[in-house]
Length: 159
Image (cartoon, rainbow, N blue to C red; front, side, top):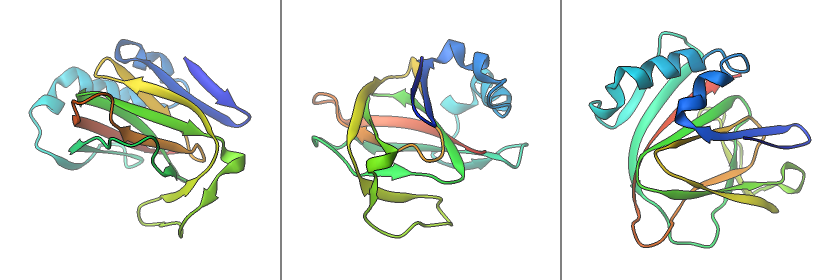
């Protein structure tokens, strides 16, 4: 499913449909290969490079936050391809025109946090992936119910 507002084209879909988006993001071909290899289930937490220098990924484990809302984050350079490996979480998306930064942009981390008007909430689980493109405010890691443990892989694609 494509969810868009003006220039924003966030994607949420089932993992088995990821290859359909390779024409839009060619780096997804390597993402699909990594998923099909089964490596994500055996790799320790941490950051990993890929053969394509415009692609890298991080496997993380954390507790989702039991809050009504979190600060939005925006990336200028990277698209996020987020996939839960275990657990569930809510991800909010915001309106880029109402986004107000709450701090300085970190070029090293390609991130700025801030606030803005919420557009929608999505509920993610290991059957789904979400792609947030540069400039799209998003607030992941929000708890769904009492089970707060989550494990996620985030692929970063320079676009």
